[in-house]
Length: 170
Image 1 (spheres, rainbow, N blue to C red):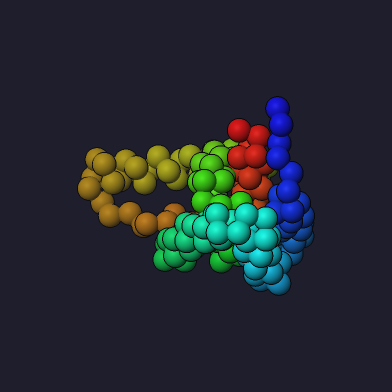
Image 2: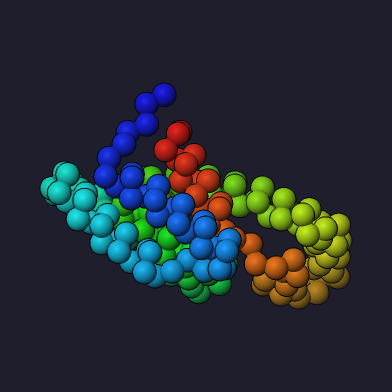
């Protein structure tokens, strides 16, 4: 298997390692990491491939912005996670970001299950989900859009990084 390595891929790898570290240790992904990586993605892709590089980065930014808006409106992730995805789009383009999103969702599910098991909350969470589902389907009761997650903050940058690695290896 041949994995293409270019300047954008090196920046992406470094950005993901730093983001995972700061997310686990400090619970944040900083703008001073993601914003420069967005600019670097544009500059590197334009320098390497001129107009096609500009298209790659701009379409990646557009998809990343769309994801950012959805995440901001639904509050499914933090803003740092969303900006990390935006930077991935700028660095590697919309197709790569699409694959990253797919693999990220799979990795995020596994991460959430492992996190619940580690926090010894799996049984309580399944019970809560079961009672909410029963209340909604059998009783027609309204349920909240987002259930409370009592286990704590999930460092989702881990799932994002896993998704990006899988996208490179696909």
